[in-house]
Image (cartoon, rainbow, N blue to C red; front, side):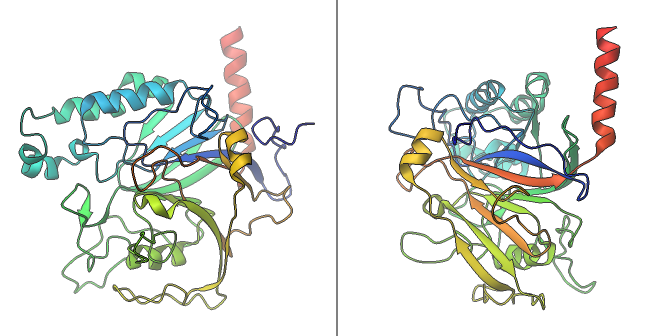
Length: 352
């Protein structure tokens, strides 16, 4: 059997743990760049993308929120081999943030304003739905795919204010944790606590986690880190900080100390240990992805509630070259046996 993870078959469900290994392909910050031609073996982000059960795109679909850019990502993902493809926006996807574009659109697009209704229709319309593409805003959603894998995901396109782009909030604002009744700013969609959430996908990173810029500064959100340390999902993926590309495995402290929110938050106060994954460039070129296996069949299966895998999946480099690899991860998700039975019944009806 090949050692290439792209061709490795996934194991069946583990009845004892009621989980099933699921392959997730993660990309972010594609900025209107589709994968390179298959013959271009100098970059891992090339066609065809590795097969996966689920594709997650963590935002910055476009360079400046033009409808034609959204049409390009729909066409590109429609051709990808995955049953479910979940997308969120990022700060560059300005026409998907209606309040922002109404105020600032004439400055970003001085020659011709884009149609915001057309932008949203492109992301959520019939062509997207037929291709298995689901565009999500901020909040909680649950999905079940044909394998029986069922999961709940929290998504948010927002990040701390950055050069007056879209989906922004001030650094002192806490979007992700419930606030006291007397607070002036209340989170409208706080992240639920463990064990309610399996996956978290945000455009921006949490503070101290794959968020370091080239000048050595951590620019992630401390409130998001506080929420994720409370939520403890299996996986948290994001982008936004191109030079933060990478993956790491965090083991949470037993006492569940919550980091103090604020620009000088101690990112390690809720963390016992961090393992940064080293990826072989030659292997990622061959596989067309950086591959991780934290499933039940791996040497070190992920412990849900005790560990979280963090992934910065920015395809673009700091200089906006599409040179960084997608992430391909085998991970266990809850398994719903009845979903397979329902699917078989549906196939029987269709074949009758």
